[in-house]
Length: 394
Image (tube, rainbow, N blue to C red; front, side):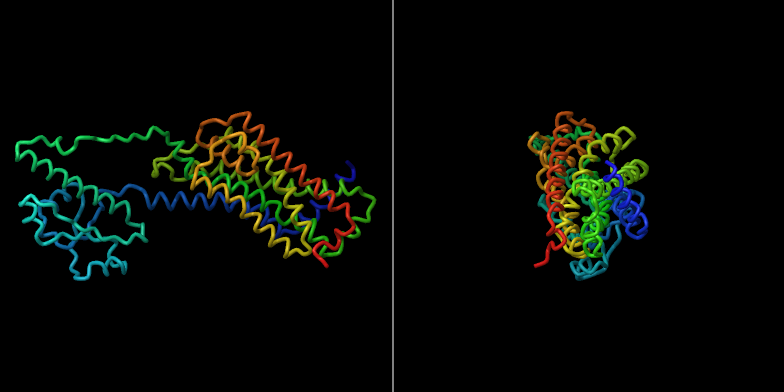
């Protein structure tokens, strides 16, 4: 234990002196995820917030051909803006117009004859800034069309219900908190990213960094058991990764409730109790991440090579997030054996308010600890070999 404490103290002291690496590990990693999530919520709130009826305008070509429709729209606060252009598609494609409603010249004549009239709405699908306003306008036009259809039936002495034999009523019974979990699916990955970045540079420095500086040989020659040496270095990485996790959770706790969720119809909850449970879920992952970072870095022969390999490792945890969006992961005992994916699902259940199944959380913890032990054993065996000093060299 004295040897482990000595190695731990030495590694922590050495890395606390490197302020640049310290700021990157303990600030950039933990803060990047919360900042990106905050930016994402703000952008969604701007893009998808309901349009203000008092400020809704509608660029239209041929408004004079449909006075009844224009009057109907004006009653709901939509102000038609006449557009004098011959090339409608080019005007929208170039960005001169956000969208354009085109009314044909024979609109009234065909409508009076009982025919179906097509109103074109030209849009540029690659630009979403005006989407809420455009959707409101198109819904109002469709509503006016339904009124005309009902009037046609009434003129013929028929009930308007004849054209609607089936009415499908879809009701969303999810709570605002449950819907919030869809957007908060990014939170588990940001925590994992913070954990990895927290121990990223320290894991490289205590392995490939020492080999590159030539200090590893002197350290291995010291009267310290190789197992104690590995554990001391691993605990140092655990301290940095653990602090990064704590900082990231604290940022989410303080900042999540202050984002404009109400404009999206969402209401996430990330209180103190949720934050504490999140820490319990992710602490085993801190232990595993530190062990894996050290193991991978030990096989490299330079700081740059280790940085390249671990950069790929930092991106790998995004796989469960991608899979979850394509095909949502379901909590199961088999899934709990897969680190990162297990914590991802448990965190989403917690954010949804569904509650975390204790047996699943326990199995995920034990699995992460087992993988941690395996990684540490492999590292110890690697450090027990004298060829460690020449890893990667021929």
